[in-house]
Length: 274
Ligand code: URA
Image (cartoon, rainbow, N blue to C red; front, side):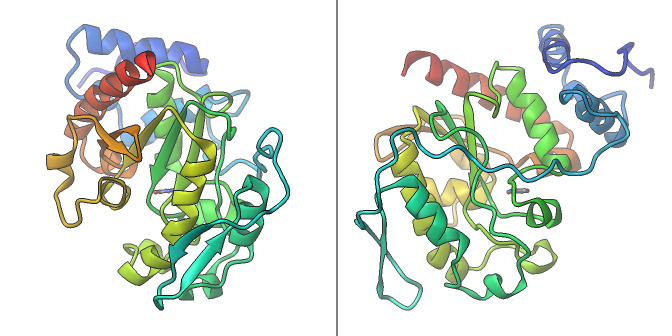
């Protein structure tokens, strides 16, 4: 197969423009057709500001800025603990983050290097919700910094969204499951109150759930296949919610990249009117 004539070292905007052009020209598999996965990721990587195209390592830990005008901890929202007790979470962002960083509510705390709380500004218009940290995220303390995260960043850039200013990212689980296994129901029960409180405090204008764990949690449709949840706009506590495939799944199944693209267009249209 011929490779597209794309110079290496594209800026994020140029890479985004390339993707848009390919869609407009009817590209079915988008970015990945005609390129190996490694090559596509090298290009994504080199499109990230000032980084060498060979460097696919995670970026250095970043700490999100505190919520503007954050108040001292007041103690307010309740979630259910995994043993049925009530978990009181504070109404201020920094207080919530501090509690999450010290959390030992489930067995995953014993194996973690770092709690992965979030990335991007809490003032962001869009909140992306993933599944759980992987090895790169556990090491850096930042969500979605591995290959899947870099691909996600590129795809978001195609609709003008970036974690530099408009995207806040968090996961259903804040600690890495061993060997990247699926989150277990008791872990989701123990950890998800942090995510739900984050949504409450960040107050995004729209939510994007990537992958079935976040999609099922936020739609409340336990056990429903992701393919049945995508393609329409749901709401989570009044916030418009779009559901799509996990970017790691796109790296395994090229056909889903086109569907992800369609979901991003739906998301963009939602963000433009809220
Ligand atoms: N996959 C996720 O769902 N979240 C991350 O932070 C990294 C990979």
